[in-house]
Amino acid sequence: MSSEFRVPSSELERRAPARRELAVSQRAEQELGAPVHGELASSANPEPGTRNSELPKARYIMIGGFLGAGKTTAVLKLARHMHERGLRVGLITNDQGSHLVDTAMAASHGFPVEEIAGGCFCCRFNSLLDAARKLSTASRPDVFLAEPVGSCTDLVATVTYPLRRIYGDAFTISPLSVLVDPIRARRVFGLESGGRFSEKVLYVYRKQLEEADMIIINKCDLITPPALKALRETLGKIFPRAELLEVSARRGDGLEPWFDKLARATQQARTVMEVDYAIYGQGEALLGWLNATARFAAAAPLDGNGLLTRLAGAVQERLGRQGAEIAHLKMTLDPDDGLGDLAVVNLVRNDFVAELSQELHGPAHSGEILINLRAEAPPETLRDAVREAVAACEKALPGGSIRLDHLECFRPGQPQPTHRVDSP
Image (cartoon, rainbow, N blue to C red; front, top):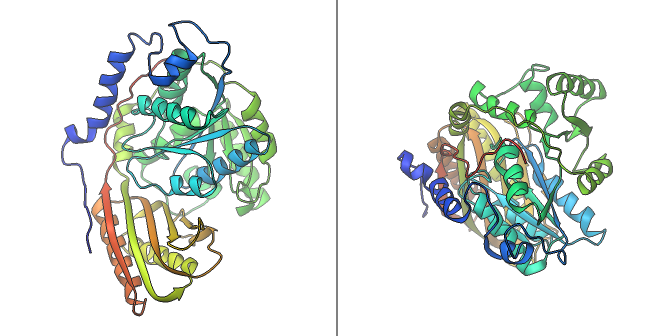
């Protein structure tokens, strides 16, 4: 078994991506001046302060929310919705590490996608623009759909306002949507008992909701109407400025009104929220992060969906024994002979059951397994759980093998935004 175990050992290493982004930004823009960045600068703004009227603005839509809220499912439903209305769509995925399930899922649905790894949008602002430039070169999207890291907040001050101020002639910015898992939210706000995160992690969770233009209660089909009503009332009292909507991205319930608002509305200027970056960074650092890839081969074709769910259950069991609170476990199985077929499994809480959101339509003989795991636990705990789960599933595979090709686990570094501005 070969693997890479990575835990950043110094503050310098943790901050390196943000430092590089900041250096690029300082050279490129003085005091948030005119854009001079790649194709966006040369096509959308050929001269500082001059708009090229021949090119229409692209719409930029960002959908945030905590880990496990269902962002990727919602983004893909929105992408399909806009595609069916004749719009070209480009997706931008984001993570602290590489080898993302979200990117694989987007590609499996046929959408052009760019991946920003190694830090959140706020610390990789120039990489976000590079991703938009690459998508523009390849397919000229009318709409960019961006899904930030699930542990990221302060997106208005560090992403949408700088984007509008520097590249306002190139983009129309839609209101910021923040999704919530209703069961997780009910536990966070004391409406029911169950596993929950420590207070510094919950600081990030609450700040995500505080800055939202729209709070989207996702997965509303999973709780009773009275429980949903109580959650809506609680969120409305705590976050009165945000518009509240109820949807089920998986089933398609309630999506049309939300999608219409995203396609037509523009984010309104307001005073940005205050953020204690020391607590924010400490909250993120309490979360362990693991991304891994594995190769499997079976003596005879097998049920790939079953293999993926068994592996998820094995990881869940081992993390439960260690008292690690799972934020999100996402895995894909991509068979070598699947012709684009992809199995996807999700687990969003310790006391939940791993669910297949995409299934293979036939047996699999060999292929690649992609693992993205986030939990409140030391990275070493995540590493050991995955290694042990892979070994256990391999033993249950007569004449077959599961080999870890790549494994990285770490804690996110202290966030250092490239820009932070108070108004558009």
